[in-house]
Image (cartoon, rainbow, N blue to C red; front, side, top):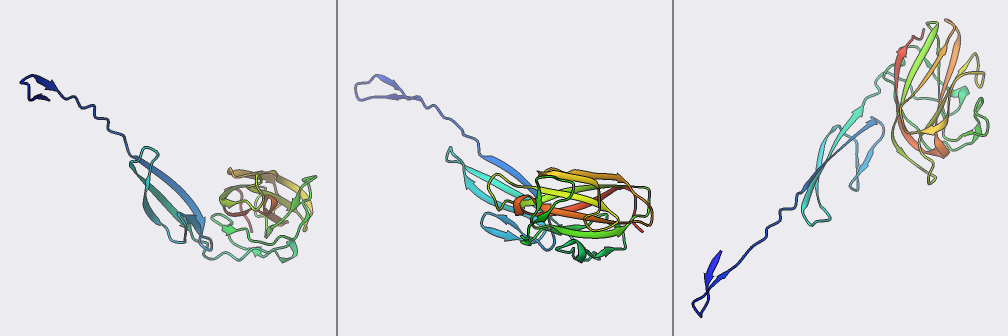
Amino acid sequence: DTLTVSGGCDSIIALNLEIWPGYQILQTAVICAESSFLWQGEHLTQSGTYNTTLTAINGCDSLLTLELTVLENTGFPTPGDTCPEAPSICTDLNGYCGSLGFNNLQQSFPGCGGNVLNNDEWLAFVAGDTVLSLLISPLNCLPLTPQQIGMQAGLYEGACMGLAIALQCSCTTDTFTLSAPTIPGQSYYLVLDGCAGAICDYHITVLQGSIA
């Protein structure tokens, strides 16, 4: 803009305008029905879209959005804290969703040398096919020990702590697969465990095979 000063001369006023962007951040999470998700100081238990406004480092408002999905576990029994307490699943395992709790009684982890089970949960079933492939998805994991987070798992044939036919010995927060040949009519035991007692939800998808 040009202005005239008291001496009659022109003066130029220049404005350099910078527009700093705000940010839109989308977060997604999946939990099981008996669990909760801690977000912005609240324990959320219902599926839905949640929004809050934060101040970015540049001073502008930023919108943080959470899309939370809560998976129901209708019709499935509660897993056992030990192998002898494992309930027998008489329906399809597909869609099973559960939560690892605070059952911190350490015991051996057969097949995974140097590892122990901390807050393990067990399920039992009878194979209905010659192969079984399970996709295990760890969800909403919270560590009890720094630097140790995620899940471990194992599939055993014939008896509690029997022959290990599929193992996930290393801790992981990524989806993993347990796959092995099975004998129709044979009993099997599935254990799911949190790394160093980590509290996780989990979801099971049957990729191949069936149970009797």
